[in-house]
Amino acid sequence: MIAPYFSEALIQALHESKRVAALTGAGVSQESGLRTFRDPQTGLWAQHKPEDLASPEAFCRDPKLVWDWYAWRREALKGVRPNGGHYALAELERRLPAFTLITQNVDGLHRMAGSQNVLELHGNIQRVRCSICGTFAEDWQEPENEVPRCEVCGGFLRPHVVWFGETLPRAELETAVEAARSSELFFSIGTSGIVQPAASLAYAARNRGAKLVEINPEPTPLTPKVDFFLQGKSGELLPALVRAVWAA
Ligand code: APR
Image 1 (cartoon, helix red, strand yellow):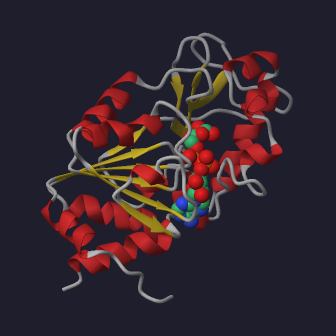
Image 2 (spheres, protein in one colour):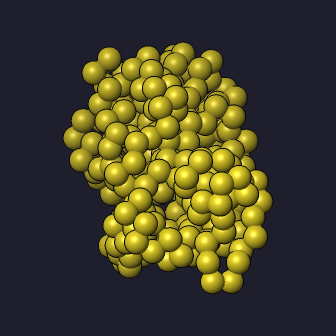
């Protein structure tokens, strides 16, 4: 791969910025072999209706269907490793005075890559809790033809992810908004930027004077607003950017 070109202004901004935040989406895990949601051919929502699988109504209607779909996604995660993009973000955290990583991803790959200061806005698919009393289950049996039940109240267990129509975890969202607003440089990486409230974070940062960097092979609704649009794959561009800034 030819070394991508990064403007002097971007390299300087990364050298000088004290407070940096980044929002990631499914695209950052694409090079690890995970499907995104809205890719017209391979996206999960190209083959499944989100309202049938990722909403409280869907779980009420058919808990087994929803449970099995998340079990299938957990299975698909087995053996999946972080890619260069995840590792480069972990390195940004080590090199920058204040770096906050905000992710919409439920795959846990950022932590697996060594990132510590991670806000999982949409939860984590490896975690399961009771749909009634909220108790987390560290491990559970997979009964043949039914959804596992909570040992405390007998309610159905459900994935610890945020479904459409549900509110985000308050503490994580408030910390994410604060990190965006106080950032001098804000990255939007591998996200189509259409799902709220995560999609508003870049605008919250920009409204407080932050410079915006977007990394995506395709333009998104945010692209006209950014200062630096790095068109390409995050697994290639992020490690190259870290090398370009801290090479010498
Ligand atoms: N590197 C960077 N970006 C990529 C790559 C890559 N290798 N491959 C694809 N992309 C981009 C796509 O061009 C697209 O803009 O990643 C984006 C993925 O967008 P979506 O599939 O919409 O995923 P995301 O933005 O994370 O979705 C947000 O929607 O379905 C819900 O809860 C789910 O968290 C998810 C939320």
